[in-house]
Length: 202
Image (cartoon, rainbow, N blue to C red; front, side, top):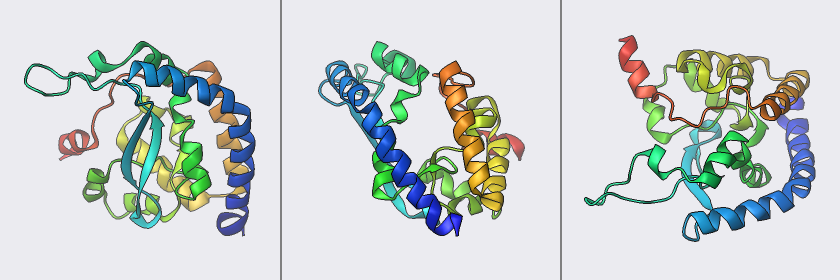
């Protein structure tokens, strides 16, 4: 009952309330990021959702599109803007994903939607993370986020899928607020790619 009906109702209710409260912040960031990124405040990328159905995730654009003399994008560290750095540190770059929740592509809580190119790297157990809607935050995010390995992240994702409940979502929601306010486990540096970690384990 909770997984199939009440969770969606709760997503819509909390998202509408949250977006209403954060709307002034949202508008302010749109303005500052548009100035920093030549009129492009948003970042769109195709990600796999429930049952591996593809959708476009919406985030605030924290890096500009500056390129070197050969036309290649500069390293992430050189393209990260000052306002983008602030937005990442405070996790405000996730706010636009509330629109994904309203559309039904995502849930507030669930396994994070990763890159499409990672789909071929999952084993059968890891693939079960796609049996539910991806979330803005999840069990892995409140248990280490970027400080844990991909193997550990996927273990948390599978644990969530197997034990999804109202009480678990409440715990994750409250722990997320605590971690965002304390900026704990938040890293603005690129994390190791899944393919690299998989190769190291073979």
